[in-house]
Length: 146
Image 1 (cartoon, rainbow, N blue to C red):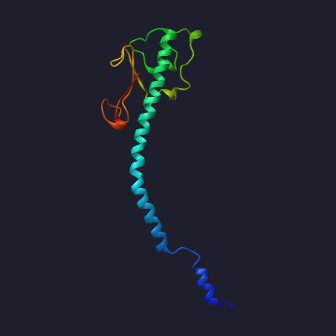
Image 2: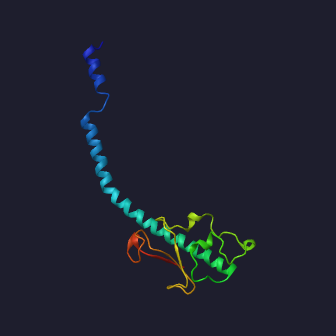
Image 3: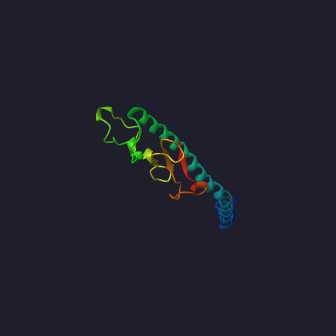
């Protein structure tokens, strides 16, 4: 039969010591320090990829608009895909995107429609990336479609 002091020792060993908890926290911190920067750099790359894909989709929607309603006015904005322009009859109108949020780039700014285009003949669809200013590299690089 066990004495009271033996029961006390086995009961005390069930929990973690403060040293064991500190070691685990330090190990988790070291792993996070090694992996964190890699993950954060991938976020910028993925936003660029999503931005390019969304811009290509919107450029196709603009081409459909042009097919349905003729050329673009020089002051046209990307809003023509969601809001009926004044030159289009209400009976001929149906939005070219599911929601107004589809007109936003991954950084929350509206894509710009440049008519006539500087890179392309009819139009350019432009996002200035994370910074919202022309030029830059990586996440801050410009996106121009089609």
